[in-house]
Image (cartoon, rainbow, N blue to C red; front, side, top):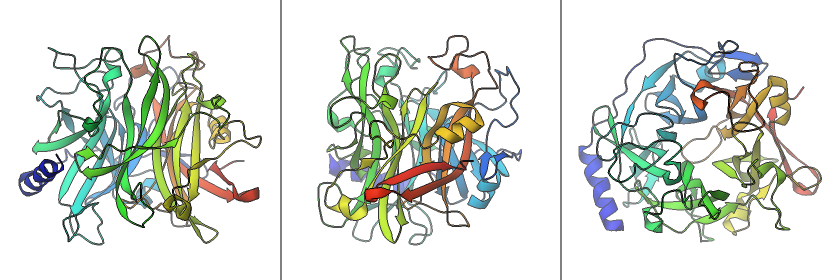
Length: 441
């Protein structure tokens, strides 16, 4: 199977067309809402607005391409900036639309066609190994691939529908087989796990949040870097098949199209005593951590690695959390340690104060520190770490009940604004780290 995967890699590198982008002509800008906090989307929304000229871009994430800086997420478009400096200033940026299709060529249409859209740019090492494109080594990438978490259409149907088919969601590769037409592979990158097909409504193995960066090779103590995929997965279900627990994992990518199938659990929503962290418990009793996004950084002269993730309900109380360890500890196989509240009983919400100041629900959520393909955090001009997040501005729909899943409004009538701020990391007593989305005033 691995030989077949690399054969397909070779064919696509040689014959697949270069990425074609539908260029948006209108320059757009965000707005600074606090010193150092830029609202990139949704700054012009008005109270009770439920229709938008451009849909929301939730779960924002930054990728560096040959043509500039792309902000992508759960949307059928990306935002194109010329530089990180433009991103911090809120613009100018343009909207680049792409069309994504199921493996049979049917267009992905309707609600939530594919979540967490992210491009990856692949190259090969001199000895035929696999790595992500590094512009300091290669002038151009060999292969551009998009990844997204999409649902599978039911048998005898061409299009999936949310929420009925949401149980079937998994992470898939999209390849540009003809200019401007990105086609999903038929099998997910986790196809070797033998979790599909499964009965309708069975969420076991449901996956979507993902990130691919270079990491320390799992299951070995020798320093060695390989492409890794971070993701969350439903690991426990109720009697009716509904999701009960999600956990966060990493696996090695053995080709641009397939994970190795030897996942390593990184973050659990449960405390050492077996009880769930309160922030991870949703109103229906399910226990959830999701959207893992990895980065490496230096603090006090030491090399660290961390994962930003969210816990709770994306429509209400949605904590921005972090777990961390020294890079040297990771090589030894020691686990990530979550940033906890002072009493050690819950996950620390790094965005709680900022969310209160901005009057947000559903965030600050999905904290995404800007990294390069090697997983290294990319600081701003002052050396500060830059973090993206999203959230619902409560003043836009003040009559919505943000303590439960929306009833008065459909999700497509609500809008999560994407923002960028600074991430402050400090060392506390006994060497524990504290993560805070700044500014805190």
